[in-house]
Amino acid sequence: MLIERLSLVFREVGYTGASLGMLADAAGLQKASLYHRFPGGKQQMAGQVLDTALDWFAENVLRPLEREGDPRERLFEALLGIDGFYAGGARACLLNVFGADEGPFTLRIKDALNALIAAFAKLAADAGQPAERAGRSAERAATMLQGSLVLSRGLGTQTPFRNMLLELPRELLK
Amino acid sequence: MLIERLSLVFREVGYTGASLGMLADAAGLQKASLYHRFPGGKQQMAGQVLDTALDWFAENVLRPLEREGDPRERLFEALLGIDGFYAGGARACLLNVFGADEGPFTLRIKDALNALIAAFAKLAADAGQPAERAGRSAERAATMLQGSLVLSRGLGTQTPFRNMLLELPRELLK
DNA sequence: TAATTATTACCGAACGTTCGTTTATTTATT
DNA sequence: AATAAATAAACGAACGTTCGGTAATAATTA
Image 1: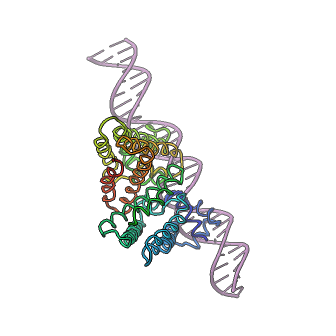
Image 2: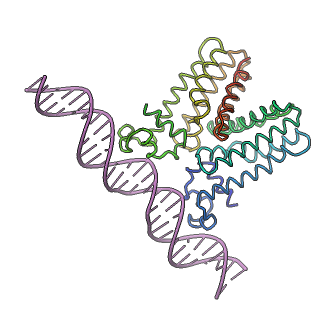
Image 3: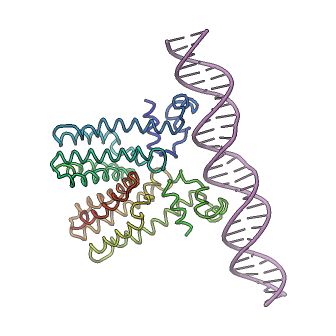
């Protein structure tokens, strides 16, 4: 899939860091050919990459968190989605990567983060946490998710990410 | 201070995102003049910015964490340093910003993160936590620090950072 | 102290390179 | 034949960098 190849580049070097040469190489196309698919240029590529990622995340992470059913099962399903989305902590988060460059993605990033927190909060509430505590747990869960990605990348180890996956149930359930 | 002005630019737009024009403007100098102070160019500027920041961090955060004395007092002093270092969550972490671009700073970033975790671990151990648990608490504290910065930036609010400052004592003490 | 030399700090202008993008043309598909 | 997909070549603009020279400051000499 073309979008996914582009996504890997953006997630590795960020928006400004991704040159059209790199993107073309990753796509297996010439730079000019990318402009046939994305007349809007680099910004459109990044936007579509972000949209696709957010769609996947909504389907495989948010939806399990928000659906009906046993909270523990829903959380495990979401954690599976998270693990896949970040490749075990090896791939950076687009929200972090695109958020660094203040640009046309700021609003979408903000909405996505809020949606994640809201989904975590619903799960925690469904698991029996009082509303206020569920909100704090949700924010802390999102914080640990993002932080573990930073640490995993900075340390060159996937263990912080894995530890975070193990700790989220304690945080959000019961 | 010249270095601090450059630091603000790097922390705002990252390494690749920072152009020499922006850096020169922030410094109140011409581009050519920056090459008088930094013959090594942009890379040397970033390296010196990183070194200066790490020195400040070591002095005002790591040292309180590792010194002798009451753990609660030491932590509060460190939290004060952290709050100042990140301007209440408004300024990004150089470890995150420079870590995005895989480059000549990777090793220094790794060492700095490990030093922070080690300092947190020593504090938690001094506060009475058994060694193994102190290590986990320390990693979790570093994770929440970095994560709260991502969230604060992404959401455009300082509250995640502030909440993190409030939660660290619970995490590391007792 | 005054004049002179070194040294440092800074700047305008240009360098070659790479950036994102466009145009014109060829190849593939239907 | 017509439409879509891919490309080679080139574009202006911005990039990081270099260079020659000018102001300012310090050191040295007389």
